[in-house]
Image (tube, rainbow, N blue to C red; front, side):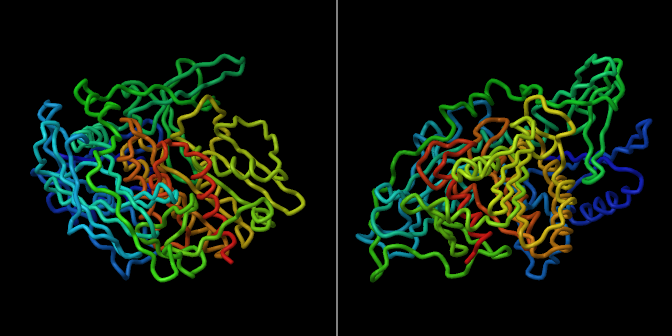
Amino acid sequence: MAYEQLLYQVTRKDLYYIVSSWAQFKHASGNALIEVSSWQHPNPLQVLYFRIFWSGNSDPWPPKSPSADKDPTSLSLELPNLIHLLYWPLTPGDGGDLLASTSHKTSTYHLRGPAQDTYALGSYLEVVLVARDHRGRPKTHGGDLFQARLLGPELRAGVPGDVQDLENGTYLLSFPLLWAGRAQVQVRLIHSSEAVGVLRRIWTEHWATVDFIGYFRGPRGDEESVSCNVNPLLIREEKSFCYYKDEDSGEFWYCDQPPTLACSMLVGHSVGHYWNVTTSHEEALLAWNLTDKVLPQGIGPVHVARNTSRSLVLSPALPCYPGISTPKPSGFYHQDVWHSLACSNRPFPNVSSILGCLAGHIIHMMGDSTLRQWWEYLRDTVPSLKPVDLHSMYQVGPLMAVETTRGIVLHWRAHSWPLRSKRTPVASLHSVVRELGGLAGGPHTVVVLGLGAHFTTFPPSIFARRLAGIRAAVMALLEREPRTLVVIKLANTGYKSVYGSDWFTLHMNRLLRSAFAGLRVAFVDAWEMTSSLALPDNIHPGKLIVSNEVNLLLSFICPT
């Protein structure tokens, strides 16, 4: 049985919405059994706990096609949609036999059709991949996480390939041929289907894989520290606990009751401990020697011919405006420069071009450290953009840099709980919803949101709840001032562990896209931008990647 655990913390006035959502889900699911339990804390807080069991051996159904007449103002993360978005084929596991898991050494791939001497620029290359176990036997089910890309080493070019899981051990790979010259297929096995099964189990059986520490300080300076988390059942439930409601987002945070100090004396926050949630066999499936490995070369280089005078598929003539549809892939690299396939992104090759674009703008960046890299890149690239010492903890912020002669202000701050950070003042942890609610907006205001990396240690329902509140805040901001530019940075590749796998991140990005579907926002697909070149995979990508991400941001700020 596969099941999803969802916890709703609600006041009495919110109860109608939860029951209504539950009724919609029950009506839509058909084959789901839903257990609902409720208990009342001495404080005026009611907790509803939903546990959803799926009967039979089949996983929740595959995603439906989005409706063309979808109301853009409706919340796209209701429970039925959440199940669709998180679909992944169920796998039977390896029965404790590591050699029965998918192997990068024995899996093979070949051209789908006859090989050609040359391929036409703008056409597609199709490849069939056959997954095999360590004994060389073909797999009979899908669920492996493969990543594929087409590389042009001499041209410093790369584009992500599309991987279609046929759910029978075979995968269909498709690569657009976007540059003339030599191109080489590369396929990586990120996780075997058996390793994915471990990650799925952790998501469905555990409310978290990490805890946090809350620091309390009394009037005489005496301190006590306790365990904190997103769910009261993750701290010792037999004891009383403290809860903290973000009045802007409606979300709750829970801490164990300190031995002697009051709940109101919470002053600090930090990450706690990563929990051991795997068996020795599961650790072997997720070990480095089986994770993120390149398959043996199955196809030789192909040659792509020039098209008359063109040697490159050009970006569309459409300027980069929020709300444009994003194709798949969203772009490609050539000569280490990202070329968008959604719009005509611009280069910003020097300091004067960056200053000319940012002049008169206030940039508000809110999210994790991969977004802080954008702030750091602009600070380091533009000498006249001077950081202001706000005496905050650098890892959490807030950070600010200004360029007074051109009226540029650049902000970054981390999102609030759950944040894996060193000890930081609780007062510095502002929710994104709170920050958005304090912005008037306008043509000189740019908001950039980058979330995902700190939510991979929790079930997807936690991230979905966060995104629901942020979506509502973004809608309100755009309604009061439609000229505000809102940019969403998708989460990038890099994590390869049980606490933050690319498999988790892939689902985070599905939720991110769904949360802001139908809104006039722009997307920067950091997932594709960090997985298209043969560079070391790192949760914090290098300057080449970051500079291209920032240039795409600037293309939305200054489309012409």
